[in-house]
Image (cartoon, rainbow, N blue to C red; front, side, top):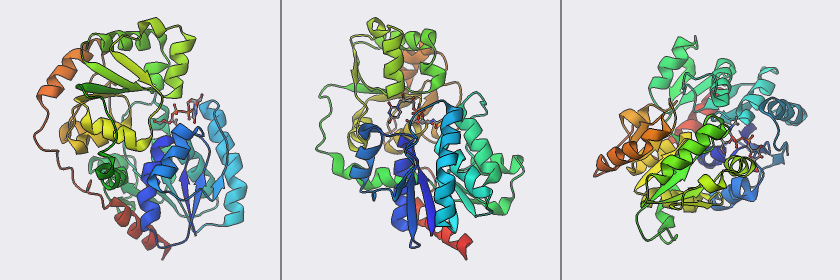
Length: 349
Ligand code: UD1
């Protein structure tokens, strides 16, 4: 039996193709890191994921407490279930907490989406990635530069296998069914911002909002993450929300991918969105000084924009550079889940 771990919004579309491809028995463990219907339940419904076998129900707290809470809650579940392997995806607190629990028992561990590096240790996800990759037995990567990162950190070459990008499996499976979902009739840009580096700093968040206002008359749709919304409210930044920016609740997965596909440009600080826009050939401006997904800049449609003041110019250039046909990125082909399942089953033998 395999424990497959998920916890936060970006995990659900990555575990989906794995669970669909594995022939081994799977126990789906949800840590409860995200718990609102809009951040978790709606994804299970739309993806057709089975209900989690176990929900640890940890909820929100500081990064340290959340990570510790997940470990405390997962250990007895792990000991009772005696899984033959533990599979984690991505770089959220749930990823590190569960792999760190399993490794103490000598159980084989697998990290899907290994080797991504922003080289920015102020990002909680970078710490989660570094530590998860140091202690996982099998490192499954989505793009070739991840191998160099892992080898540089002393991980053995034969532990690293290129499998492609499971999040893209889910995108390619479900996008064709979204045609009837309503999007704005006029041209629009789509905005997502939730990184602590951007939204936990009042000054910076205010400057980003001003800069989005400078994109008028372009309409912008902004499904705001709870963290971002909370900060805008707490810091009285509502009056800095420009009139061309329409703040809406977090979107369900199908609405969100449809909005991405139809957007003139996407402005984001998310990791997964950089990948999804690249595959769809939609221009993307990433409001960050770095990315752990450089392939989206070299082969995809993404550009980094560290200075909020530069957003309007970056948007203009990216729209001009919109490709006629979507870029092709090696192994982002909708078949990553099958390759991941093969590798997991191989280490169980
Ligand atoms: C987490 C991940 C981040 C990922 C993001 C996607 C870590 C370190 N970060 O960040 O990599 O890109 O998920 O969304 O794991 N909240 C709710 N409802 C929920 C979940 C959260 O209201 O269902 C609120 C809580 O007030 C919480 C805050 O959002 O304090 C942040 O949630 P948290 O899970 O701590 O981190 P994210 O910012 O979502």
